[in-house]
Image (cartoon, rainbow, N blue to C red; front, side, top):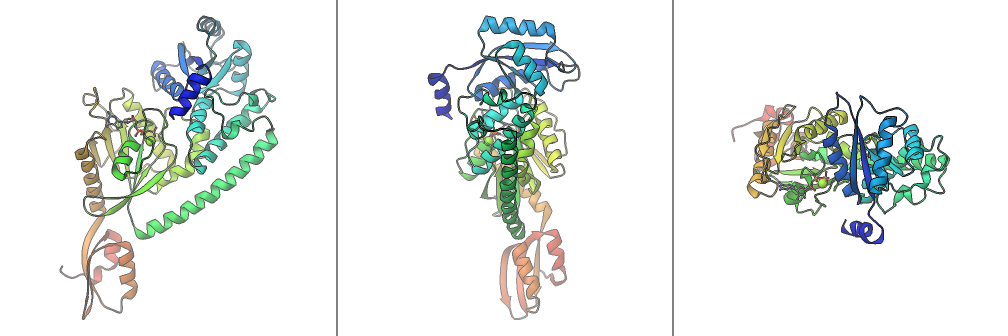
Length: 429
Ligand SMILES: Nc1nc2c(ncn2[C@@H]2O[C@H](COP(=O)(O)OP(=O)(O)OP(=O)(O)O)[C@@H](O)[C@H]2O)c(=O)[nH]1
Ligand SMILES: [Mg+2]
């Protein structure tokens, strides 16, 4: 993404924003920490923060996000810093967006629009781009209500690159948006069906599927690349990965497995995006084991874990076996950080993605879990049991096969349920 950055720096002035947040007593995270993350998001999008204003309020003001007194303070800050706009830490309602824009006279962006912008800059595959466009259109559609075409002319919130939904924004009236949404939904559904087909072939072959999941910037792609040499983008920026990639890997036991890299989660991830990316994330629902990667050097590690766990539960993957990887142990502060794993984890490993030894330990842990799900059995199948022979060849890993006079001798490693189906023909190895 170096080219994007240069475009922001040289062709156009880097945009400067004042960050706004409200902090209630029941907030899961301090406003300062949440704004720190918002600032990172802003930098990822190619803009910078020039100040912060936080107001103690149980929930955002329904009309103006911040209270009237604070708005005056925001105006002063804008005048003092020459900021191009403000960015709020929460999603704004159409009413709040309009009122703030009218009162401040600068660009008003919310967390959701910023994240949508980043996703739109970073999407690579056709499906990824379509999913982002769908989320953008849904966001825009609700914001068009009662606002005429004012907002639709805004284009990309922060970055200089407008892609997808941004490009055709002028011609789009609501009807067009709806039509486009319908079309995208249809195409995405087709793609999902194709993926389902591939998936059923995989299940048929019983290759175990491992999914790397976790907060954005935790190190999922770094691990994925080192396990597979796949060359997925890994960067010290939020949301480096938007697409699900799957590759075959070899475990220390000699077993094959499929490893999947996925999009990261974030605190206050826009619901439009969760919905749009649900299909890609369904890979996670079909995984046999989740590898939950945590940046253990991040002071928000505890909250980040909770965000990921909640996302897993929402996706319906809350009951999968999990290996928790407390990553970035090579970084200062990681080893002293006391994190409590808020779910039942099969194993908890402290690792650095850069260490060969640590990564090997991860795969060994995976082998141990798969071993516990499987068993080895030796059988002598009479030649009349052709169907069973077929079944076990498809469902198991054949370690030995010998065509004997009285039948086919097989030593096979398979899931316990398949072993029991041929259990009647068990013999000594
Ligand atoms: N020091 C250190 N840095 C790491 C480690 N693992 C990953 N990183 C760095 O952390 C940053 C983020 O890594 P990624 O692999 O892109 O993170 P990700 O989880 O895929 O992030 P998203 O795709 O945004 O969800 C990169 O700069 C990596 O080099 C580690 O064990 N130690
Ligand atoms: Mg990644």
